Amino acid sequence: MGWAAASLPGLAPEEAARLDALPVTTLPRGARVFGPGEAPQGFAMVLSGRIEVSLTGPSGREILLYAVEPGQSCIQTTLGLLGDEPYSGEALCVSDTRIVVIPATLFHALMARSEAFRGFVFRALASRMNDMTALLERVAFTRVEARLAAALLDLGRSGAVEATHAELAARIGSAREVVSRRLEAMAKRGLVATDRGRVELRDPPALKRLAEAQ
Amino acid sequence: MGWAAASLPGLAPEEAARLDALPVTTLPRGARVFGPGEAPQGFAMVLSGRIEVSLTGPSGREILLYAVEPGQSCIQTTLGLLGDEPYSGEALCVSDTRIVVIPATLFHALMARSEAFRGFVFRALASRMNDMTALLERVAFTRVEARLAAALLDLGRSGAVEATHAELAARIGSAREVVSRRLEAMAKRGLVATDRGRVELRDPPALKRLAEAQ
DNA sequence: AGTCGGTCTGTGACGTGGTCACGCGCGCGG
DNA sequence: CCGCGCGCGTGACCACGTCACAGACCGACT
Image 1: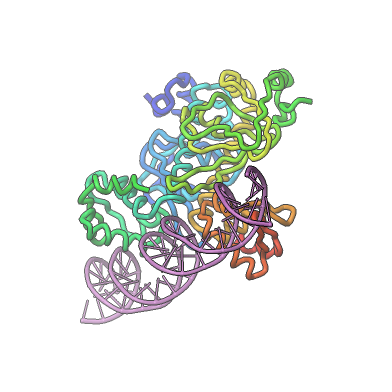
Image 2 (image 1 turned 90 degrees about the vertical axis):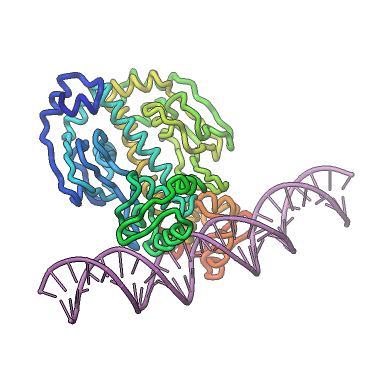
């Protein structure tokens, strides 16, 4: 079975076959998928790997908008295809990533013909829009410590996070020094232990409580 | 000519007629169109008036997400219809507002049949998503003074804004006291003049420069 | 006219967050 | 061994958010 049938349940077999026939592009870790102001060439689907889309402010501060994982599409391309609006974020591969780009004409044909494809595209849009709303809420209303705790839990499935303070800051939209000070405070309370380029999670339940507090 | 043909250029005449036949709902100023956690009943289009959608944090602080004006649809309803995700914002009418709700079944039929309708829905989604991204960028990276200046210019077409400090704060996602102090500072510089429930714009060009600064 | 309650606004104090300007130590290649 | 880059710590300072109040203003009611 090709990727299309797996990612798009309900798609007609002949449509799936056309998608499976499209060329697969492999992007290395660190590659830039698109940058701000560019126009999309097609509708991109991720087969394996992970793409992170983030926003950079004029001062150079960054914030992670969302990640695109296998089976998901990059909605920025969708929006560009339909609304003719250029990208406003920057997308980078955080690991080697295989993607398929569905050309605009085939994309529009699928939207017209396939209920399943429309459903997929819309669910993706709806879910991203909800992600963005939730992110906005967190940035506007919650303190850095809560966002940092959430980021650590998100990254540290295995009990430790391999990331510099600057990387953590870029993820949550704060500054390096602030992350350093927060981590120091958290270490003093026994929640984490820090090392160069590494944060160990010592008390995940407490971090979870922190992440959920306002 | 009905509203449908005006708002949805390219729609087939018989489709437009079906939309024009739908009942129009009139909502008074201040009415709540939907609140967080609710599920949508249909796809809402605004014919006249204005609806503002905002987010409220746990502390009670608010921020305006976007406004829906005549000829536009409320994308929150779109997303709910397609992704089955509940609303996360709250929508209030800021003036008497007439809307048409397209039932889910008719909406899906139009999406399947009409290229023009799909285009409209997608352009609306794309434009909202861009609005949200821009808002996130401003909240994450720009100072209160710039956001306040932008809000004043946005509201004060006629040279003055009828709004309390608390209302301005809710619009830009800040606190009342902060807005009071910023307005005082701006008044001292001759940019505005303040009065109870009213702000006069004394130097719009300077405000514009402020709004565009980081 | 007086007063009463609600709303709008000013003010001070305090903690958090962002920015700037450093200095310090570690690791790696020359 | 010596730089050099990178990650990190630190202190000072300003912007913001929050809390607790105090006036100031307004309409309504006696």
